[in-house]
Each structure stands twice: as C-alpha cells, then as structure tokens.
Image 1 (cartoon, helix red, strand yellow):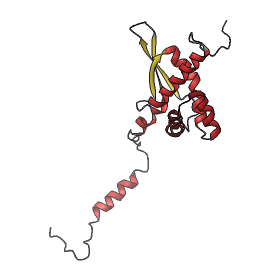
Image 2 (tube, helix red, strand yellow):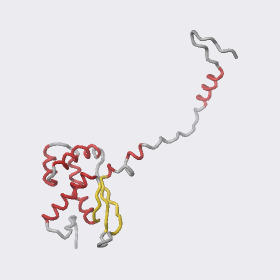
Image 3 (spheres, helix red, strand yellow):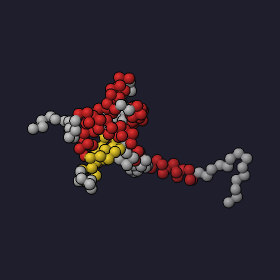
Image 4 (cartoon, helix red, strand yellow):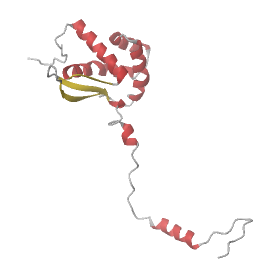
Length: 167
C-alpha cells in the first residue's frame, strides 16, 4: 500500500531523479512553460512549488537553499527577479498542468506545465483589459437631466472681445 507516499520515483535512481527534476525546474523557470509527460509534470510541481515559495523572500539564505537544488545562476536570477515579483501576492498554486493527450511514439500521457502568472490567456492581464462593467440606471439620474436642460435653455454669453453672431 502507498499510504502517505508523495514522491514518484519515476523508475530512476535518486541521483538521476534529482538531476532530472533540477533540469526540468531550470527549463520551466527560463521558458515559463514546458511540455513533458504527465508523471514528470506532477513530480515537478511537487519539486518546484516550495522553491517558488522561497523565492518570494529575497535574502541570502533562501538564495543558497534554492541554489542547492538548481545549481544554475541564471535561473536563480530569473527566479528571484522577474518571477518573484509576479508571484508575490499569490498564496500558492504557482503552476498549472494541462493534459495534451497521448504521444504518438510510445502512447505516453503528455502534459504542459506552466507558471500561472505568466499566461496571458488565463492571467490577470486579459481580465484587466476588458472595459469596465456598464453601470445600471438608478434613481438620482434626474439630476443630470435637469442640469442638461438648464445648460441647453441658457445660451452661452459671448466671451470678452467677441461679437455675438447674428441669427
């Protein structure tokens, strides 16, 4: 029985698995979305979410801990720079897994894993660009109508130095 077992071994030794997860995490950080098998995507989500949580507070201790997992300076710069700014207000759930179907060669389940805040289709940027909701008509609209009537009824006085036009 698999009670409480969270780690998928992926039929690899521990060194091979650590190397695989590190490489996948670096690629996810640099490209913001990658396509891989469903099992690897689920294992990567468990691996990278704590690292993303650590990246929210930028200090030397967290940088060293994340570097011990990734071993890539460029990925660390990207993670603690661009990515940490975007995920600062998110309380968790930084990744999304989308199933893509089966691979032609070996019939393996393929999935797309992406960082949630970097998707323009589902992200906040798409909802912010929409026009504001139309206001409903309520009581009190008569004030505006009354002001418009008084403005239309009272002709404007000519400005100083202008001659009124003959009608």
